[in-house]
Length: 72
Image (cartoon, rainbow, N blue to C red; front, side):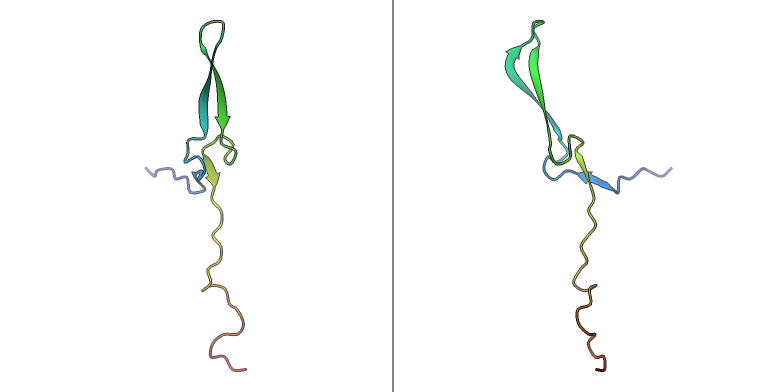
């Protein structure tokens, strides 16, 4: 059976896939639990993945000027 591939997504470069961090403020709620603030990565918006960008054209595939050896 073929495996699913995530070809269009790759881990975020800024957060390395750890998109959300839970930070305790040091305060406690009335029930005794900690007050927690969640901070999300601004680049991937908390998903951990970013879409792949198309590769720029390489210098060998772009023709600049005339071809070498072509008659003028």
